[in-house]
Amino acid sequence: MPAKYGGRLSSVLDVKMSEGNNQDYHAKAGVGLIMSRLSVEGPIVKDRSSFIVSGRRSYFDVFLALSPNEGIRNNILYFYDLNAKTNYRFDDNNRIYLSGYFGRDKLGFADFFGIDWGNATGTLRWNHLFNDRLFLNTSVIYSDYDYGIEINTGNDDSRWVSGQQVLGLKLDFDYYPSPKHTLSYGYQAFAYRFAPGEWASVGQNSTLVDYSLIKKAALEQSLYIGDEFKASPKLNVQYGARLTHFMNTGKTQVYSYSTNTPMDTRDITDTTAYDWGEPVKSYFIPEPRLALRYKINELSSIKASYNRNAQFLQVASTSSAGLPIDKWIPADRYIQPLIGDQVALGYFRNLFGSFEGSVEVYYKHMENVADFRSDADLFQSDALETEILTGFGWAYGLELSLEKNVGKTTGQVSYTLSDTRRKIEGINLDIPYSPRYNRPHNFTMYVLHQITPRMTASLVWTYQSGVAVSFPSGGYVVTEGGQKQQQGNAVAVYEEGKRNAYRFPAYHRLDLSMDYDFKSKLWGMKQNINVSVYNVYGRNNPFTYSFSDVYNNDLNAVITNPGEINTRSAEAIRTTLLGVVLPSISYNLEF
Image 1 (cartoon, rainbow, N blue to C red):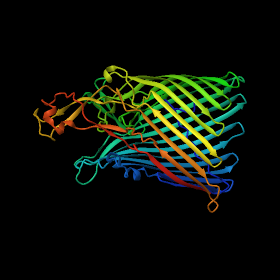
Image 2: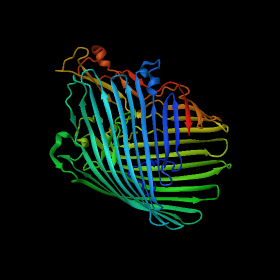
Image 3: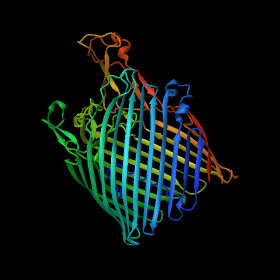
């Protein structure tokens, strides 16, 4: 990973938007059964300024309502997003860019549960050329992410909201001192504001008392330098380093404890209040990087790399379904930054003149990995450090890839065999366990075939191991006064089994698509029609499992004494979002 990228342990997604045409106006529009989209671009001032605006909206929810399966028919699922970008060229050496994104996803199960999440971002960038060897990009970035959960029980209807805001500044220099060296260096700063969550009552009949958790803030600053050095015609060396300073700041409150770890709210001895910007805890961490590429001959090469990455915002997973309700935790007095060291080795070769194949292996060691305790109180605890335990983890894997980019038939086949483990004292009897996202097998096949100059067909098949989850091993009933209660008055509580010892069934899906470009134009506009089938063989991939409350159905038949552990299996209810064959047709215009 180049030294200019940081803040994450595994990967960084670098997304770049189109600049917009500064000569002519163009538009693309598509109307389909699943989604509609529109994109418009053109000049504001020819040769000097341009814009592009695009948007999409899906309507999966319309088709879910037509399903014969009641469990699917009552679900809600759709998304929409909007992208916009404009730029202005002052002269040959100066140009500014302004871009923004807004998107939202909505998911609901019948009338009793709903979740929505979204992100709004904005970026202002100034590109300056000092001379033909030195370039500068200055960027001001803002991001606002939030999610909300609404629960409708008929009595205490409520909504939970959580989110984080980020304001950033980046100064990125690129310098070309000689044909053999390409230097990248700069400064990056990000100010974070975390809103861990707040409950709010919904409706006039709700008896819930509104409350919010203590907010947190942090400042992250980095200096970096990297060099891509062409040591010889066969050897390319990329090396560099980052130095990052992370400071947890006010305005916030921090608890003091009589014990070190594990901490408990019963051991709180004092509370310290910090004003805006006042330091709470600081960390300095260096991150060296090295990558080597050696060209064996015209057809093959080998690559080797070492990366150290520091991540100051940890995520602790709270959902087996992959919902975006994970808890982002900034490093503070009690929770240290996540640090990962990774080594990788790969062999790459061109085959038969039109194929590219690769084999890569990697190993990563991680320190200060955080996860929730089994009895964690996610939504009500202001002392998050008492709900979290830390340890270490490791990951290793083999990645195979075969790609074809030449000819009428192109595509890619890739397979990853991997394993990821964590070992945290106090979780899973101190035995290493899988995190939720550990999928040992991951296979993807993509094929695109040019049938005629105007007709193409594509195929995508995906196979992944199911996510690792924790299922209950038993349960007990909480009653008042130690007496058995009548049906409906007792509360069933499940005993957690081994951490992530089970797996969902494997996820796999086949999608087919065909595009046809019309020879004739409609009022001067290019025409295209797309026919696709999502989930061709109707795979019923599970999204989540829930367990029915067997105790309230027949309390006496299940529990003989209040508090007795019940090892009888509860009924698992499987929920699927799109377990149907979903055909679609869309008509597209371009002018």
